[in-house]
Length: 469
Image (cartoon, rainbow, N blue to C red; front, side, top):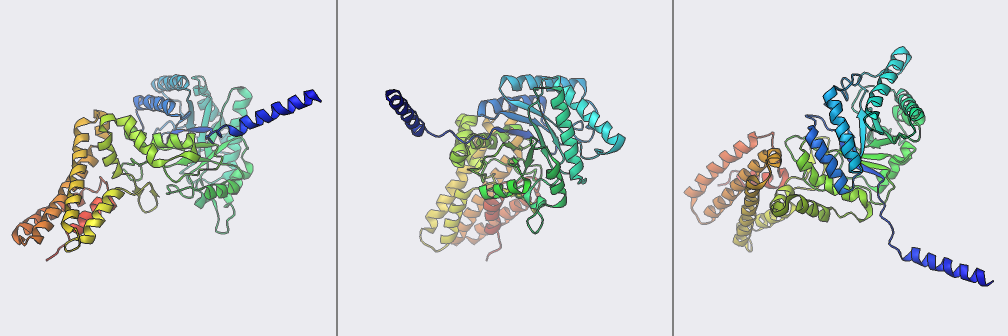
């Protein structure tokens, strides 16, 4: 009896210790960056730098999948040239040193055969492609079927299953095999009645359970993916899918920089994998990617604003206040089919709205004009500081947007001076400034390939220089 009592006491103490310990973060197991954008792929130096960044920020994977690498997609059957293989080998070694899994991806769907002798030849071609990088040290692979016309779901699943089984039969140390189906967002997977579409049903009905499927949320580029949304996708897929998150990628809106934090992702779901698709601008992508790493390491406690401010401080040091002011005006990405990221310049918009609500005869009208002018001057000073202080690489990535922002702030301040002159009855001076402002606005309108603060500062300029008597 005495032994039982002692044992019971020890168990109670152990239980108390467990209860008092803080719960471990719900960390996403496989988390990282996917070089999966259209346009000019990153350089070897940029990839090596990003692998280091991943290792330093809690990411544990990097997917090599540049859409415009011809040996990845258009000419996937052809082996990589010797120089490229040497680069891949260096990347594998660097990734291993940083405890990052380099995942090698191929996108064969443009012309892949599934059946007969041609199908068997393509299976062997894929195995040969993957074996070549296995010899370099790659142990994790991906085969993607996104952005193609062919929708043979059963054929794609059978191909993936065959590759996975053969690789694992040959090598005991194969890691993950990831894929992206041709219908890769919930809106495209689901029929009007909520059931799976024919392709999606065939794909998931035949796909082996150990193959990790990535999807992009309720659409290709969406503002949010809630826990409820995620559960709906998991139910539809019959498995917990990984997430391919299209922020800060900008290949669909090349004139805009996505410099905000990652937002709108599930906080409580057990997601097996998440990968963030970056911009072609490797250096500037790090702001959003650092916040993505914070999210992936602890989704439940993620604070987007705090993470964003911390990332900018760590990356820009003394220039952090200037970079935060600039980045604040370039967070939101939207076109006719995509929408993601926080609104641009919300604090500036509040100052603008306060001024517009009071001008010209409201309470504190002149003080609000002065406050707005000071905010615009500070924004211009921030852009100027970045033009002078950024590294050559980072400045090259954002020089057009910095120049546009400075032109916009100066033109907006001219508009405020024009309105102040109107209030003083100086019509000739106001007319001169109006004509000058309209010329500047016409120049800005012509620069359609560069975008920043469209709904805040740009919209304000349009209102300021509307014709008024």
